[in-house]
Length: 99
Image (cartoon, rainbow, N blue to C red):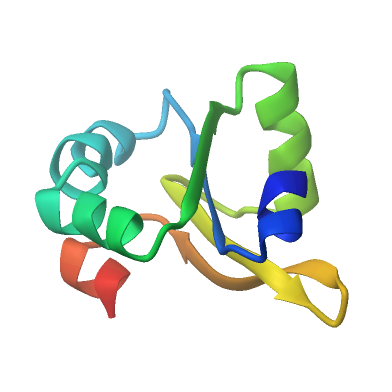
């Protein structure tokens, strides 16, 4: 997050809930979809992913207050602090993600 703040870039966080019923489908059909990957690259988003089963992932999940998985948060610098500007929680599609 410090790098995103310093470089004034959007920061896309993915929290991986391995046990959630929608996780596998999301990873295999949405997160790895060529259009999603191209969007991340084209817009030079910094992407960070972590399992919520790891201490760092758990801390981030507590800070972002997610309700369900899969979970993505788009974070940017606003008023000199990092702020979540968009969340995607639960089942989603490529089309919804790229709107």
